[in-house]
Image 1 (tube, each protein chain N blue to C red):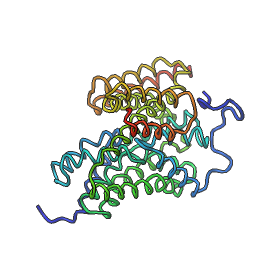
Image 2: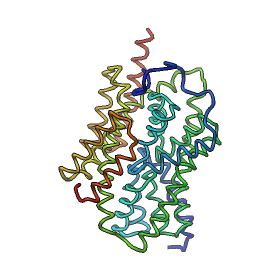
Image 3: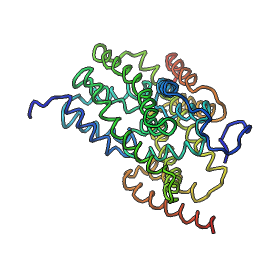
Image 4: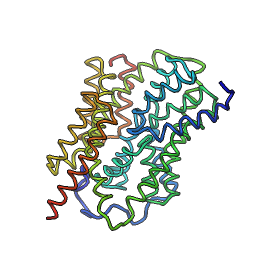
Length: 176
Length: 201
């Protein structure tokens, strides 16, 4: 293998990946694992699993697992390069597409397409919630906590942060 | 047809664009706040801030903007920040929201990477994080529920069946995403088209 600049390898890898990551960050995780662990040997399997947990449980978009991968490859510059490569190209694409669709245009197609995507989008999110719940809620207490939070957040306007803090406290106390 | 949980006062159905759209700094700070609050995903907080707190969009507008960003490639909440910011304040607004969303958590994540490299795992921390993630799943369920309410109010059977179909295909049957979307997207566009023609006729 050539002694390619690792920063450039990060940028090209994640820049390309982001454009194919249809379905968001969660859908891209298997591909990230394949590239970081199997193809480039940037991390071990366990390091990747830990990185995934840290990214899930830290503030910010879950896609920031790439920040951790980037750091493992090339320190702080690697962390920043991987993050930008994963986030900027598709954000710009989204910007142009949304401008295209929202031009006060002759056609009714843009509005129709956007409306048609809504039920699919909600269905996908409901599916993610189910899949996440299956991996998180392995005990009765955990399941109860999730259900309680879902109920409170649905019927009240309490700041979600308080509910997360409550979850953290219950975890700390060893109840969940 | 109204904002789902807003107290039904003032301007019933005026497109949301407020008299004075938020400034760049306000956008940056708003997205930084929702991002930093967003343990286990930012969407919950983004919806809370944009629809409930600031009233920058109605529930329907948020759904449509999010749906678009969901189906474009890449991290959808990142796409949303750029699209949403630019709707209010042009490209500069998009960049402000994008930077606000990403800069603070990226710095935090970098610090965590350094700590992880030194110390690995600590048991108490793991327990706390496990509790937080249970709550995070609950919040996600609540967001799904709230996004559904405009559709439920319309009692649009076709739309609800489409939604349920995607949920079952992906969440329960675990069919491959691409295959499901390849069928669901044209189907949904076709049905929406037919229904709108019926309404128009």
